[in-house]
Length: 279
Image (cartoon, rainbow, N blue to C red; front, side):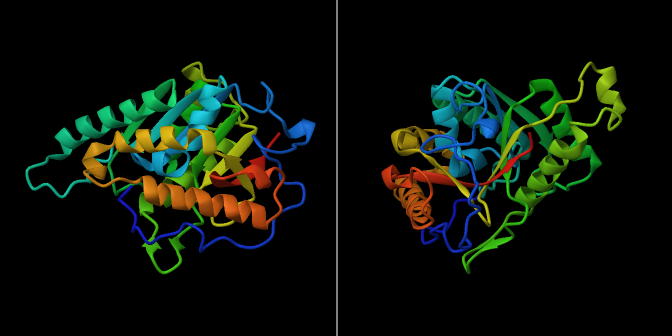
């Protein structure tokens, strides 16, 4: 993910109104039939993103919170960010090595168990059957209860940011992998031959959501989020992202309070999601 404009608030695209029955993990009540195991913490979670550093910008506070509570979290990266450099001396091969190392370092800070790189070409992701198959393979392999991915409907934010096409493609392919591809036995039968049987993901969260309806309190994990983001030195450089990340998280918490979201009164910093319960 390219460094965002420091003036971007991360709120402009939110739409008023929240379903009355929208659930929440961490910081509020949740219907028992919608609650995953381990007291609201998924036993296994997967974060599917287009590039190294996308998760750290979007959902790393949630990742750190889940991991600290005992969740096994796996990252799946569609690309290794091989186009993300203005250095005229940098090659894609060297950049892949650098950015994969940075992502692994960020994952260690957050408590992520494993990072899987699909190694599709940066800036060329397409939500086709090849990408969907690759993500479906990861879902069947790791069998997450909860999955976080990018919102494919968020095409732009206010007048400040046009969404990276890889983010759109990765979100689109991931949702198609969740439903119906990972679930259905006759879809991608080659996976069964690999010993990868169907799996149904129960909880899906879209980060960078156009229409969020769930907020997760990351107040106690904000510093961990920022430390993980700083591990992406090839992208961050000398810039300190803490101020902008704090403003985004404060705005998310304020939006949760304005929606009278359960538990929001105690939130200082939050991450926002569009949530689906597929149980």
